[in-house]
Structure formats: structure tokens, C-alpha cells
Image (cartoon, rainbow over all chains, first blue to last red; front, side, top):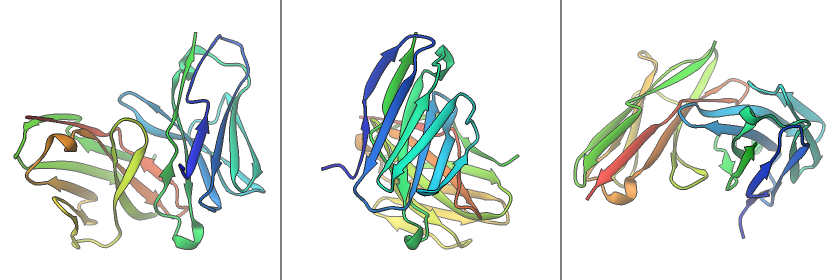
Length: 114
Length: 110
């Protein structure tokens, strides 16, 4: 079984719709991250959480919100989706006790906003 | 503003060739540099470099960090078609946040 899972894996939606992307992990890691990846731009950090009570904005948080429902769950919401939010979204985790260095990625969610 | 720049953006070589991928960084409170390989979907970890001048090796892949030049290289010797991927480098700051480069797309032709 995968250690970091994301649902859905693919989603097509329309402008203005509310979308939630979910991430779950069985690694027991305290830190979780949401990134988006666009061609030619690499990975950009949207939000990150160091524990359930700690949520931080990343480089490109506008238009997104997150919820850390439990140590193992971190969801990303697009309140009113727009076409330029079409991208590949990754959830990642890391372990503070192991130095917080290596991040482990989920399989990604491909989101298309029409 | 912190940034990481990779070069080249894309590279096509033949099987058996040796390739060198470059990564330069400008990061306040730099902690370490990481290399990842991205094939179909999720990036997978290759190396983390913290100390300058100490080479890390894994099979045909090796990497080294030069803190004086604010750069790192990733070498792949005797390339195989399975090495075709996007190679990402990321610099970690003191808050353990990763600043990512855009990646180098490597294509290995048989």
C-alpha cells in the first residue's frame, strides 16, 4: 500500500466550483505539504503544516485554503476554481525527528479547470 | 528572493553517455541541497548534500555540493533508457522549506 495517497487522482471541474483535494499518509510523519507543479516552473509550495495546530502559507497560497484534520490527513481546497489553477498537485510529508529533510510525495492529482 | 536555477532545461543523449546536470542556488540561511528524480508522476528522493566537497554516490549516479560557488552537480555515468526523467534539485532553508528548481528533462536515446 502507498504511504502517501491522494484523492482524486484526476479531476475536471468548471470555473467557480469549490474543489477539495485530499491527502492521507501512513508514514506517521508530522509535517505535510501541498505543492503545485506547472510545466517549466518546477514545484511551488502552496501551504505546509508542521503539526495539526500549525498551518503556514507557502509561496502561492492565494486562492487556496487547507485543513489539517488529523496528523495523517491534510486537505487542500479551492474555494472558487479558476482556469489558471489547472495544474498537477502533490502532497508530501516529512519527519521532523529524522531531520525533516527528505520529503515523500503522493502520486499527484491532475486538476483541470475549464 | 530565494531561487534555484537548473541547467540545462533539457538534454538528449545516447545510451552509454555520461551526463552532468547543474543546479545553482541563492537561498538565505541555506541548510542543504536535495536531488529528486521524477518519472511518470511523483518525485523520488536521490541525494541530500549538506557538506561542501563530499561526493555522494548511488550506483551510476553521484552528486557533489560546492558551497563557495553556491552550486551542485548531478552526474550519471553509462546512461540507460531508464534514466530518462525530469531531475529536480531543491535547496532547503533553515525552516526546512524546499525551494525548487524548474528541473532538467533528460532523454536517453537507445
